[in-house]
Image (cartoon, rainbow over all chains, first blue to last red; front, top):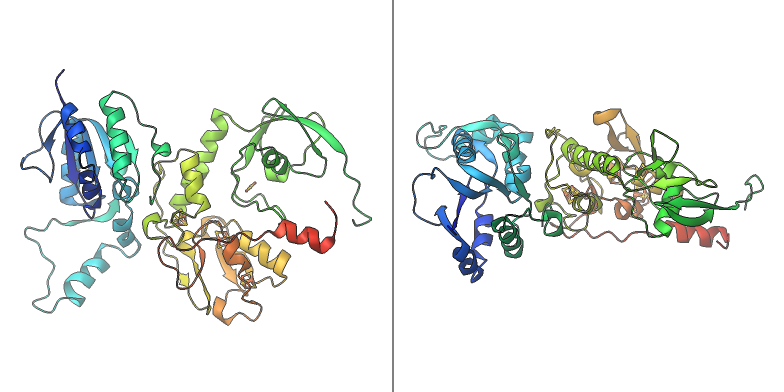
Length: 177
Length: 243
Ligand code: SF4
Ligand code: SF4
Ligand code: SF4
Ligand code: FES
């Protein structure tokens, strides 16, 4: 049987969910027997492949770039997992929604700047007006809350998905866990 | 027992097809819990008067097309109660999701993370994401009290604090002001809690709060563990009712 093709992506999150993924430790080998990591911040492929079976999405949708990426990822993914609280609820990144994009940029690039204060327009992607959970933008197939979801939770969910079953998420994790 | 109270009788009823006997002065919710039947509830608290505010305890009563809050209805002879159905679970999940959407619940940085009834019920009812748009209301934190703080971001307006302070402590510091999503918990007619002339700093409201809205100062993320007061037991001792 051909190996399942797995991807992980990192939008507006702290990378904690990816660290938790690495915490699978030797269980990564068990996953590698059944699946191949075809795209991830942890490996060196530059473009998102055409056909991916399972994509774990860490982080909320906060910038134009996040929005562009997640739409492309959705179009090329069979099972999309909102991976961790930032992806599921927008979590800490969403706290800027209380004050608005302008206030945040003003604070970061003017009030805290010591040299040549300005809002960058090159290289850094423009922020969206609101930080949004992934399912607010594209269809999500599995929600895996947790901040970050534990390695045990990730492993249990992946085992189920690779076997073609839906994981029983509330038995594994919750918001904030 | 006060002379105006009529004597309770023993009734038999069915909860999820199970024959159960109860006293006629008990609510459906009390009887369900006494018999280890799970019915979710947030505004009910043993020993406080029920107000039917959260609607989470909805059950089906045979013969009635309406859903009924179990905390607001007394048991009667031959009543048939259904506590678990697709329809009920659907409404319960929606209520939980609306509570999350209505204020700013960031569990990962909340004082009550891991010790919160809202969070626990979300998991128990299978709420793994919120389908409604978050409102992100700009609400405040009142940290003017010397020992406690009120974070409106986490308040679900269950009014447990209002009743604990009024019915048990006898201070009546808290009230709810406004209507619908604009409702806010206020102390002493809308003055900062720290300036309250009525608060005795007993901590009852803090420890009865189901969420991280009321907490002890100095508590950091996940550190606010509530010591749930046993009001019902206290009341029994006080009234020496022997129940
Ligand atoms: S009050 Fe409960 S549900 Fe709300 S953020 Fe805190 S832990 Fe989460
Ligand atoms: S500390 Fe006691 S008196 Fe003060 S508001 Fe809370 S319940 Fe009322
Ligand atoms: S502060 Fe706590 S107990 Fe009081 S209404 Fe809000 S959630 Fe309920
Ligand atoms: S517990 Fe019955 S309405 Fe809240």
